[in-house]
Image (cartoon, rainbow, N blue to C red; front, side, top):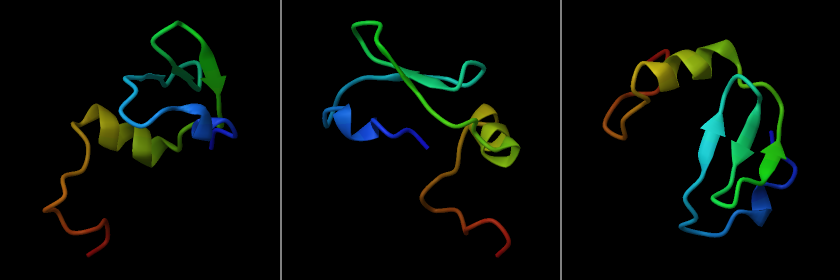
Length: 58
């Protein structure tokens, strides 16, 4: 979780830095957050979840 996620403007292009547990804004500023759980990291690295897929476990 990132306490300052609300600072990100709608439509703002951001980059997620998984190894350093932060969000990088276009100006280079970073927003620190909690580590991403391994299951979610694996999903992102595999291409992410798609809207037409059933939730995990179903």
